[in-house]
Structures are given as structure tokens and as C-alpha cells.
Length: 252
Image (cartoon, rainbow, N blue to C red; front, top):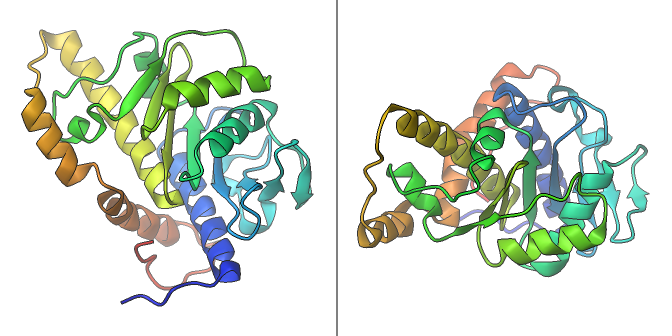
């Protein structure tokens, strides 16, 4: 059984996982200029969260680049600027969902294309079943999210789910650990790609609801998300010589 981390160790772990997530997102092609943000709630001061700095490419973010932000938008640890939209969205989610440790949002190509349809993912594959009845569609677009009210509306749409499709914008996922939020984003983006390809080829064959729920119970859990992120993190370490190589990241 893994030894339980103390708060300082947990802070270091979450920061480490945040960097690994950003590197993984860069490898997946999720970077888009200065857009995109991933956050992790601080375990010592839970009213604050860590976020990647504004304007720095995901592939180059290191541990000491991360910024800790309070819920007034002030940087209380680190030096740099934060993405205003990132603060507006993530602060509302962290406030509304005490169970959420991490949230991920980027302007991925598949996510943006799928969001233009304004519909939820259909359970057309086993992988898509992980999101069946566990994600929502934020069915409005009011411009760049720069105010707290819109962030609150997105958080309300998310509800208790693991993800939300932001219509005409992209995807957002959350989790009880950084690894969970990261994996759900990677998986959801790929599911969007699969559905776009399938519906372009013909009519979709949907998995029946009972079977989709059963599949979600098997593959839509926090444990499975953490397990699936482990090889992703391992690969990031293998191709990132600037990061300190340690042991293979364990399950959270």
C-alpha cells in the first residue's frame, strides 16, 4: 500500500502532475497560442489553485513556472500573469465543486469541431461510454469568458459531471486528481474525433443505455482514469530531458 503523502508532499505531487499534464497536452497538439489552462487545487490552502502561466507554451512549462492564484485573481505564489479567461472559468468550478482537485480546458481541434454541433457525446464506442450521462453541454456562447458570471454558469452546467462541452468553444474536464482531469480530457477529445469521423461516414449505431451505463461503471471511474494516465506520464518523462527523471508516476 502506498504511503500517504503529507500536505507538502501532496502539493509537490500535484504541481508535478500539472507539469506532466501540460507536457502531455503539448504532445497531443492541444496548444493553441496563449489559450488553454489546467488547474490544481492547493492541498494546503484549498481556496487557492495552481495554474500554468499565461503565454507560455505547454511544452516548456516547468514546476517553477506554475502560479498559485486565490479566488480574487491575485497571484500569491510565483511570478507571472494568468489567463483572465482561465481564472474566470476555473475559479468558479473550484468554488462550486469542493470535490474537484483539477480542471482542464484547451482549444483542441477535435473538441472545438465537436462543440460546434452543440450536442453531447453519443455512446457509440466503449470508450465514449465513460462519459455517458456524466457530461453536459453548455448550450450558449457569449464570447470570451472574462467575467465571473459566465464562469458560474459554466460551473452550474457542469453540475456533478466529469466534463462539459462548451458550445462553439471546446471541452472542459474535471477530476478528483490532476491525473483524472488530464485523462478525461485526452479521452474525451479522442471520442469527439471518433464521433466526427463516424457520423461523416454514415448513421451512428448507438450502444443501448443499460449497456452504456454498465461500461461506464467499469471504465468511467476515477481509478481507471488514474491508471490510464500513468503510461502517458511515463512517456512524457521519457521524451522530456529537461524534467527530472524519477520513478514511474504511481497511481494517485
